[in-house]
Image 1 (tube, helix red, strand yellow):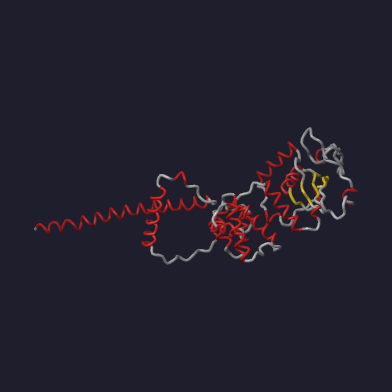
Image 2 (cartoon, one colour; image 1 turned 135 degrees about the horizontal axis):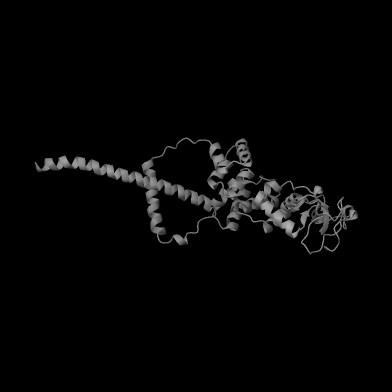
Length: 340
């Protein structure tokens, strides 16, 4: 398959930038024939995949790429480019006949970073005219290759259900949403409530979703962003894109909630009762606790709880000392009067 010499690309084929790069010592890519491009072997396009060499300038992004996936970070892209520079393009980019990328957006970014003019592609003539099948293939290819976190998998599960139901993005019915929640919970081994929290975050801009995936934004804050008006969400996304710290940006943009009408003493009693039950159940069994899927959120809650408990302990100790002093002050005259 890869047994012919590299094609010239409007320049001397001996220059590195004029040809796709392959692993040193390996075979080069096949020549791209104009006839191949204009006259596919089977005009109905069914059942055909073919390796070709194409100019990078002829390839375009799939319109759903940014909605389904977040791009590699600058550091990750630099590592990919370095690997391709050293070892060559080991995996062809998968494209439609008109040059839309199905799988390989990050490889194309790396190739551009390296200054390459052409890359080797696999052209999916078999998917011509079936936009749903093209997007499904894009998702399936990335599911097998990318290092996905929980939120990524939930996002893709949602889009796959939309494709199955022939719905536009975000067009699931209430019944479909319940089905999706159950699917996600079963597939990822989490409760329906936890699955719903991830589904809630998918309403937020991709910048917010990525900040959560990278551990820069808790699930609690990401959910709060998802409940904001669209204009407020876009302002937050813009500040994150500009380099703002996600947690600080979100905290500054969230509306200040009015203080809730609560009885602090009652809530204190509830906390003590819950703590008493937890101590009886967990004392000596800490190593058996695995936690849920969103450990960052759990850690944040436990840290805040620890801070609250320390504050309460310090206050209770002061109150205990104050009460002892009061009782001594009351007790002395009482004792004198009693013995008089």
